[in-house]
Length: 230
Image 1 (tube, rainbow, N blue to C red):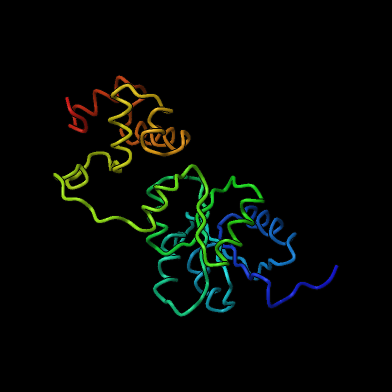
Image 2: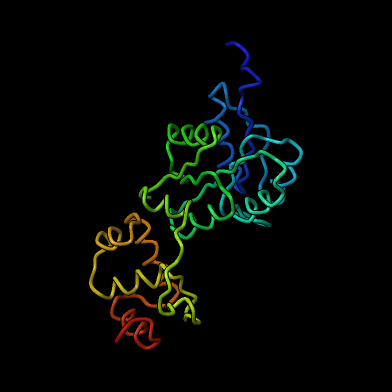
């Protein structure tokens, strides 16, 4: 096999606190002659140091890490602004909130950890060529709205403007209202333009945060705390 063209090789740093995950990604990427993993780190602070040292083309960073998470790492890297390194965030969740925060931090891509090899490689090359890549069940309308948000219309104060019991997110409140209105996970996923898996995750988090075990208790506690209309 001939030596790869160094000028056209995409230099990559991997940041993930699980060595097995890094090993798997490295093995996948190094099968490609135009990709070169030039370093590995286990947290965001190490990632920032290595980016300064190695000046890679792309940083692939896990969204949850000790010391400094992926979104915060991307945000700090983009504040520096002097390096051309682009960032792709890895996550187990296709949550709209995570994606929005990633875009706001300056990430060029967002991949799920169950992404197959072809999509992984496509994302890397798309980002390297100056584009953006988001995997998961995200509609084009949603992606366009995240990248070029429209001015917010004036409206009455939302539930987010006051203290919400159980530290529920705005999306969890939306899911809660639809669940108690009798909608199925599939129907909720269509209404909110999220995958069914994401809705199931939100439902699980609702039950856990509100410390309930069934729909009846969920409904009772939601009304007690005025989380939904009685």
